[in-house]
Amino acid sequence: MNKEVSKIIQEFKKDKEISAFLKKHKLSDEDILNNFGTFFDIYNHHQLFKENKEQYIEEYGNNTVELAYDDGRISLVSIPLQGEGAGMLEFMYYDYEPKVKELYTNDARMMVLTKVAQFLKNYQDGKYTKGLYIYGSYGVGKTYIAMHLAQRIAQTEKVLFVFFPDLVRNLKTSFQESNTESLILKIKKAPVLVLDDFGVSSLTPFVRDDALTAILQYRMTMNLPVIFTSNSSLSEIRKELAASSDIAGNRLYTRIKEMVDEVKLDDKNYRLG
Image 1 (spheres, rainbow, N blue to C red):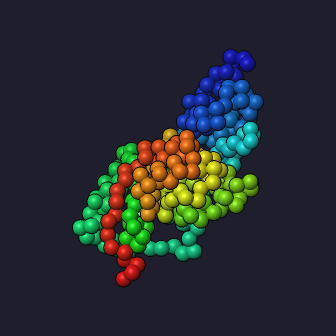
Image 2: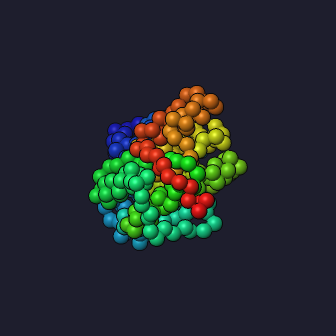
Image 3: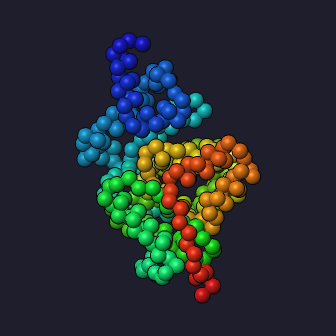
């Protein structure tokens, strides 16, 4: 490898997303050299986007490209452009788009609502903030509160709101299909991600390790927040993971624990009227 090529490779590695990709897949300078054209393209995409966003959109429209790794092959995949100020709330695996007009408050909800307000303020001020893990019994309004938060953020930023049980079902049945990598990338890259009705009882090793842990690892590296709603506390999640796996389950639990502030919603079941 000559000095000029080596110098360019070092420039590639200064790119935050390229560096995270290399680290995740344990790739060497030799791997970069063998896929030089791919890394050259992604580096130039990132540089143009940073230097002249308007020109980027003129040339590439409302899509960007990201690196993908599949069984030793490195490629570029196209995903929707997620730019600043492009507010949108997208629902995944919902047959309808729920709307929250007014947030009901009472003493039982004050702890959760205080955490939500703190998160929203820090996020809107551009400060790093942990995500939230909102848990409580069935019907107490966890999804409703998460929806309210998502709607507020979506005024200025993109939010992906995912019904987690259906995501798991989809990944379990389609993990060998070509669009799975694009789906995982979309969830990884969302500026703000909500995983609604989170649980771990039905996770397969692929969903747990190759999808969910990979998504959370990327988001933690890139400081992209996740909002969870769940019927289970984190300690209960840890016990479930320990019962079905060892190191891999603990790795997933640790990722979640590091990324969120846990808060309990202790209220009545509003679905019973």
